[in-house]
Length: 367
Image (cartoon, rainbow, N blue to C red):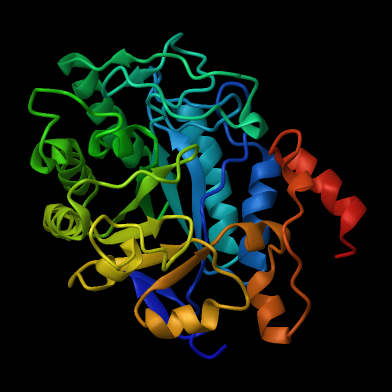
């Protein structure tokens, strides 16, 4: 796998290979949102296993409506920041860079210890039903529509969380605008039917994202990598398409780049899934054509196709989640030609916690 193990860069981050640990919800923090020693061990194992870049699970950004899951970690106060600093120190000590994914649940709130009702861009409920592996909620709750005060507060929450992430030692932040969470809801006409400056045409729907990228860039400086995870799909709806299609997506990426975004992380069930309206290109293919914007690709990457994808996207990093979850030493295994197992869904059932994963590993894997 010569292409996979080529030297790469992401902003000012130097990498010896192109494999990235993708963000995965693990609901294993303390009730108050502090990272645990179990989380320190979990993330450090990826670094010990040969990954040079790790993206954290989604971390909530404020003490209002951003939390989406019980036992989700936050980065909103000194205690949470100090907890993350311990994790970052161990990950760096094992030789990997670490990016903090910042997330606001929006309408996809399954649990929040600060606020009773979800906050959404509009009143639209998500399609489908909540994922049982992340909580007990059986049906989505109708969200309260954001007012201007909410929007200002959310902006301040993201910027404050980014500053805390930098202070904790993270190498950058990834703004989670995929999978149906709040930033994605601004872009989506399924969620966003506003008639004000935040809704309607694409310029209005992407306005908050552009302002956010600029604000985080101004607050954290040139030496701090800012990325964004983008998808059309949500966790419970894999069919939605942006009405503006390929041209609209390219326009969005160019504007985000100009606002200070360093990289985009595309995810749409499969890297080469042709899902853009009126186009035969995937999100990754369009993003690879935008100059001045680094790319992380995600979706269906396995040991069988990653070399081909690395050749097709010669400047991109490859984010793996399921395979990394099974084998936290995946890069070393690939180098040594060892067996790679498929993800057993029971690893995530009944809850996708780290303790359940460890219990599964003791029973099912010998390494």
